[in-house]
Image (tube, rainbow, N blue to C red; front, side, top):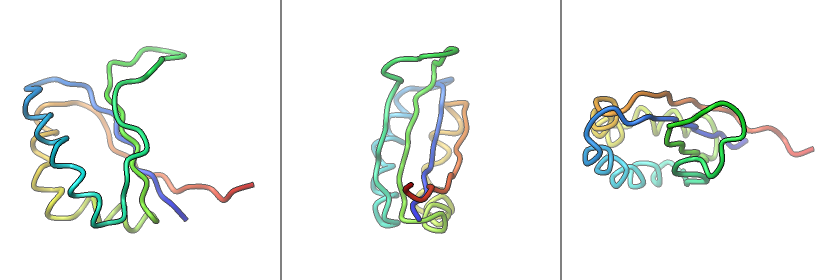
Amino acid sequence: MPAYVIAEAELTGDPQKVATYSAKLIATIEPHGGRYLVRGAPWQVLEGESKAFTGVIEFPNAQAAQQWYQSPAYQEIVPLRARNTRGRIMIFEGVAAA
């Protein structure tokens, strides 16, 4: 069953370092079967407020998502994001089609 990594991040530091992280990110997800479904600022905020950048990445399963997150390639670029944004990264399992 597919799994989804959902990331929300608000810029708190150097935008160039976050841009470098973003540019290198795709190369870390593809070897684990991941692909972007959503990436960017909200098109419209319907409730509450959001200053966050959001990304949704689909993986074949939760194990692949976890392997991506723990991979040396991804962990190498984590400091670029962690030192310059505030937010969260979560893994969700998909649901079976009705």
